[in-house]
Amino acid sequence: MIELYAITDDPTPPQPPLRSVQSDGLAALYAPAERREVTSEALWRHEEVVESLMAERNLLPVRYGTLVADPRAAADALSERRVELSASLDRVRGAVELAVRVETREGEPDATRSAESGRDYMSAKGRRMAKANLVHEPLALLSRESVKQRGPELLRAAYLVDRSAVGSFVEVVRRLQDSHSDLELLCTGPWPPYSFAGGTP
Image (cartoon, rainbow, N blue to C red; front, side):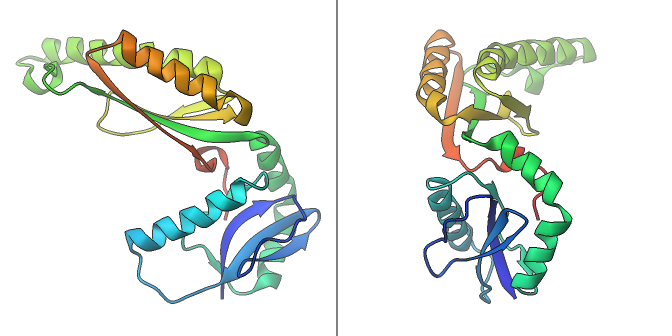
């Protein structure tokens, strides 16, 4: 068994212990699978490997624990899904993922938790959505694509941002934080573009 880390169209061999198997202009980057428990440390090790690969090439990250029988099986998967994977690579080429979470600053009232009626609840929910959009809309304009994700925060979103625009994006997050003292903004990344990689294995 082998564990997949990423799909790329860069033919440059990865550093050992990673290996590469190629098919139709694509390459799967992999390592021999190891028996190990799913721990936060193991997840971070996988993430560190993918991030190091991302620094060297455009790629579609593969989620932790994705196993296939052998390199031939990986090559067959590349061949079967060549059109889809090539399109996904073009989608993220030259870009990274930035994540933003927005919460009500501690000590600020959260009306959705204390609303006494349905009308109060809907009114409070509308105010929360409006606040979230005040942050999301300018960031979405700076990104190629964006996706809102489920979560308890006012906003949890991922943004596909050109590598050259990361500094500008982070600066806009800082300005938005300065403009909204009642909110707490957290921007993390750059990450491999998991949210925009399509159906990678």
